[in-house]
Image (cartoon, rainbow, N blue to C red):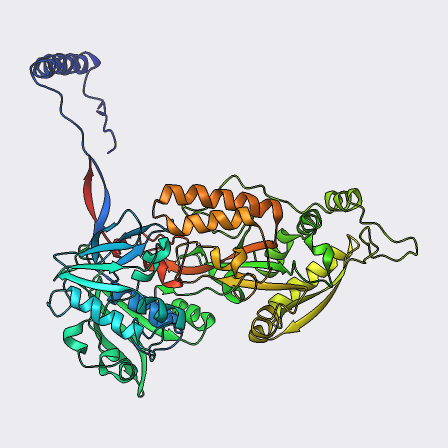
Length: 573
């Protein structure tokens, strides 16, 4: 508010004004005395500060890249769009947080026997299905029977594992799982979406894919199915409504609308047209466009993938690959930062080992090897890798074996560009690499599984398996018929992996994995390149959005019940 000062008219004397002003001074002085007396007799009051707080209401709409198949968590392994929606409709016994630690979902508690073979799991007493029926132990047993069936969509090794586990129903809300031997990653296998027995009883695994339930599902998650959006005879979207009886508390956003689009470009166009508030996946081809949108926030989360160069350490054609110092020089000779920036637009994190960063099992103090071709050359020369006297540009080991080998890679544009860069980088070191592109299935099934390769550029994907458990890829027992394609044979590392797999103490497991990672970084049985990231875009009017490191792309909804569109004025204590 402005200040208004008295205006002196020509007929008003200065003395008269001063008399009036003196009276005002006296009045102010008297007022100050009264106020001071009051302040002395009263206790001070706390001043409240008000700030916006989350409130219920609003509709969030998202452009989902993909198409509807079946809204059933036992059938969505090959359809990420289905998994995104199922994540909000269905619950599992256990979820994993952003650090890969198990947290309660339907199960409010669990306990493990001292020998690590018995797990008692208690279901929340207030957990109910969207139709009001209670979630019971029988629902979990029913779902596991479907998973175990030879007709289920689950991998054969998962089905076989469940067949070896004895499950006891202790009461309506408590289950006991008895394992044949200790297996610390077991909690990973309790993340399946639980189905309602009272609605699907009598439906076999063979019949499940055709069940009408899949198009009008009832779950126990934070959102309940409302309706399919159908246009011209095709499902173009799905509407969900907040579950007011959700055991985790009603979500803030009242309604969620998913609309299907064929590509990230189409979903981004829908955002620009005002049809949606979010884009489920921002692929590299539209990343710069999304970043240029003034009101669109782009979030990224690390994917559960690792790109690396596998080296066949037991191939007699390339005996020099058994030398850890050579392998170290090869890693220092790869310009990984250039590859990430040039071909992935910066959407990846440089890797130092096989365990994902920002998880409980990751060791932060691993040695990081930067691109340093001069140091790599010095290391090669110091270990007798010299240019032969006969000349040429390819180095040889002390036995005269030329540093020549073939690098297999998937026959897509990205991996071809990566492989060509590696080839050029290593040529500067005097290492001659021949490239061979193969379809990914053929590369894995015909070459890696048969160990008929020298080196290979590959991606390891550990989607929906938050427990790190590097055992299958690096334990010496897996070198012949398992997934230890590098055929790394290190007894100390294998012992750490064995012990970490059989103890349920998280701190003890972290120490064991730390020791394993240190040995891995020293030995480098494979050359880690990067962990790719997943990008996702949401309009700035959507508040509370957090995208954690991902074990599945649907994990971007881990904190969705806390997202909000409406705020209220609340006092800050």
